[in-house]
Length: 391
Image 1 (cartoon, helix red, strand yellow):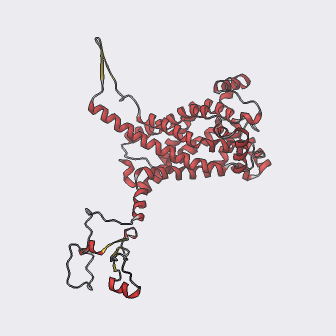
Image 2 (tube, helix red, strand yellow):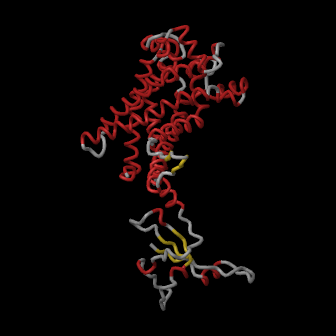
Image 3 (spheres, one colour):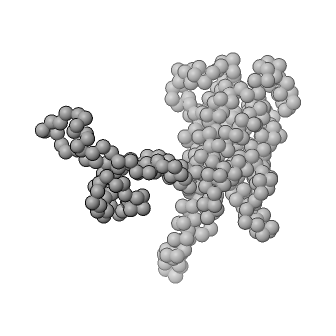
């Protein structure tokens, strides 16, 4: 649809003209017609559009086909913000980022009660079994107590999952591309006497490196939210709301209080993040090859995601226990100085089985969480990216 702007003579008859004012230009509006793209509305100088279209009468509007833009010409100014935003959202990186955020939010909304029980059992608050912890929380805080700290948990998980999954995909593609270029160019070699040394990165798993990077980046960015969530969950009487928790932590420990336990968190996150991504990708590829399939069904994604979460949680759980003890130990007045001290304290007081205290509750939370997250993530990638994420 083309709308002709008022001519210069009409504009002058409607408003007073001044001798020192610049000459006005006529513009045409392109787009906005029925069936046309709403993002394609543009305002461009009429003489640019009519550069190759000569007509005897300016009153006759040229056809749309005759006014096609020569896109090789610079068209300034040209505002097309809608299309630009639409193209940004359709990029692979942004699609993966949004898919991770949506998957994390949907998963945590369903599994918040199990997260509350797991945290209480890991730090030694209340009953030592799952059923007893449920009963205690309901008796003291009601059903809403099972979702204690869920607001901060949602604020934490949305950026955490978005950053983690987005980082994983980007680093995995970068590592794979680097390996391919390295192999094509040839590995660098060094000769020391009669010994020839060649440096190769073909043995490095891009998935493992990407998983470790994803865990580290998301932890550094979102650790303060994890601290707030644990304080709200373990001591709701001291920290009744997010704003109160932030003010109290800042008053007592400054900015560093929001990063309490960041070192053990990174140490515990590395094996978990590396393992869960490596196991999921490996099992997914192996299963597809054995069944001669190109992709998994939703139920298969759920199962493989759950198994990868179980494996990763079992391997890294002792570090998770030590990390939680360090993060909330200050609340009980007996905070170990470092992770090794926290582990030795647990072994001394509770034995080796203490390193896996709350493991059952953790598996009940981690397995469905991992499976549902992967299922939702792959589903959202299909919706937002279509076939592009499979290439």
